[in-house]
Image 1 (cartoon, rainbow, N blue to C red):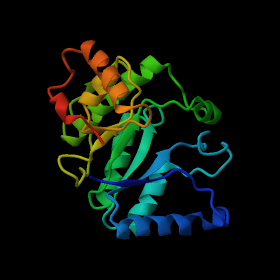
Image 2: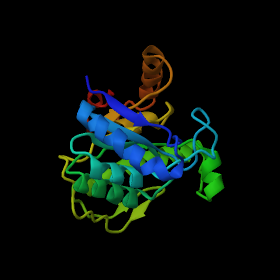
Image 3: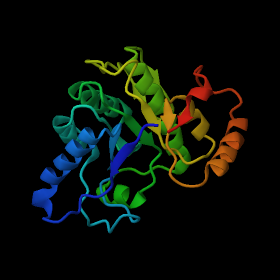
Image 4: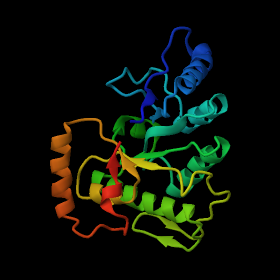
Length: 234
């Protein structure tokens, strides 16, 4: 069993001036205690289940880069990045940079996104749910292509990359693990087939398994050649 630690809040005694020191302490403690992974949310406003939107929220990949500098062993990832927050080519470069500078310790946590409040608040386009799942599938395809070193043009319904160059390549082999966190719908099966693991936070395992079976029935031919059994809960 691998145990990870998530940091969902940065509202601590001492206020903003103490955030850096407290986060560094958490990172070093997690590393020394033997946690396998350390995660931050990729949100820009605090989410309602944790606190009001005005509570402190750090940008995810900047926080992970900071944690990479104060840790040596623990894996690092966002739980999770909304696919609409960043263009996939830039996201792959960002995750690759984290992987290289951390010595091969990056995860790519990615999902379809859900927080309309922060998206509208900061002027980030918030496409309909169907479009976000289509974008999630394409983003994972782009990530795998870039991590393979394949510079051929990518042309999808939502994204077009003329030259998806990714240099340097990540240290993690064959690439940083990707962990999507999709709600179960018609495109979830396709997204999970592109991933090495998946994360679910709500509902019982039996209920999610039933939804997965119904979703898989609509995708009898997975969109990739990857065996579906390798997309495992984590």
